[in-house]
Length: 205
Image (cartoon, rainbow, N blue to C red; front, side, top):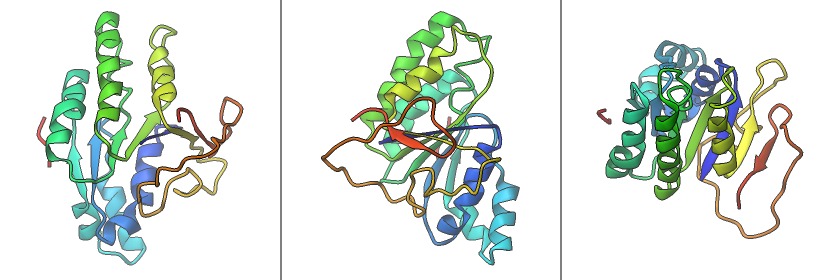
C-alpha cells in the first residue's frame, strides 16, 4: 500500500518525532532519506522529553540515503526487496531528485514509471512524505503521477493542528491496514488539511 502525505519542508522532522513512542517500543522501519532531512537529534530529544529511551528510538530506524535519482530508483527496485522483512518503508522527500533542474526531462520521464512500478512490486507499507515545492509545469507531472498512483493521500498542515498520525490516516503503531472489500470513500480535490482519500482501489547505496 502506498500512503502519500503532502506537506511543507517541516513534514519529515515532524513525522519522525511523531514516531518516537512507537520506535522506542521496538518498532522497526526503513527510512529512506532522499531529501537529506533526517533529524536524529530531534528524534532523540522528543524521546527524552517523553521519558523514553532515545537509543531505542534511534535503533528502530534503518537509515539509507540515496544521493540522486538513479540511486533512489535502484534502492527501491532492487536493494530494498533484497533485505525487506515486513517493515514499513518511509520515503522522505522522494520527489526532490526528480524535480532537480539538472536532471534531463527525458531521464525523469524514463525513471519515474520505474520508480512508481517498484512501489507496487514490493508489498510493503510505503509511507511517502511528499515535500511540496514550486517547480516548472513540465516537472509538476511528477507529483501528479505519484498522487494518482497512491492508494491513499493526506495533507499535512502544521498551522491547522492538532495533527496526529491517526488524523493522517495511519495507525499510530504503523500496523499495516487490512485489505478490505467494500465501498470506496472519496473527497473533493484539492484536499483540506489532514484529509485523506483513497486514490486507487541497513542498506548501502
